[in-house]
Image (cartoon, rainbow, N blue to C red; front, side):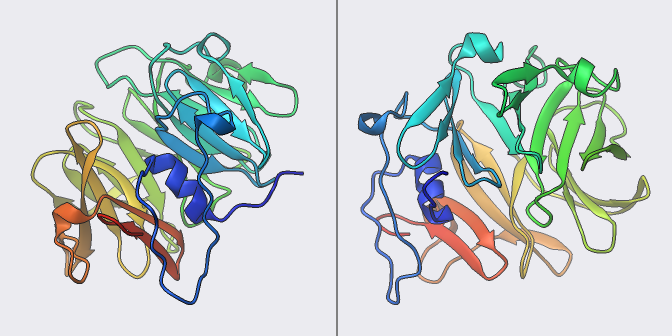
Length: 281
């Protein structure tokens, strides 16, 4: 059985923060620093997720590692069929298979697959989906922040699928696919779609509403309660955050911290959102 960790500790690994965390009383979380001395294969971590068994999965350059609270088990680039230095999107499904998709940009070829964590094998998407799409088609994978049993997969063809034991087509993005397509569900069976600089709400395959933002493009959803917060990225891993209020996307502010000081934002529960600012979390 894996050692149980708080999701705040998980987010610290993902962000590769070097700051000493300052947590106000009362203490809600235990924080543990995990680094290469503990077996992490690289000091740079691109993504972190946690499966339903409690294992923590960390993406480092060209590798995915599983951490049980005591030691790391690493799957290397040749096993995953990805490039040595690339990062990936990660998403565990309800059966604790780990889905991954290499991040290379829309214009470049990439690889994706599904790790069967119990058998230590990799499924290709051609086989797993029975030909619905291929491993080279997938450009983005994410786990729903609202219902963690749902995964969203988008393809180079602009098709967004939801997976929860079966595949359901959510939306087809019209026109040229210029960036990742990211999806999140809403309680009324509608969905938010992020593509390039547009945030759209769709239902039954039809566009209901949309909002545009200036460059750079929208990268991911980071919070959903009480307001939707989305992230834009520039210069690789520098981020800005935007909140949807009154049908507008506006810069997200924290008290005493301007937008440029918010280094990271991570919602672990509808009542708890973690923020990283200079010198503090």
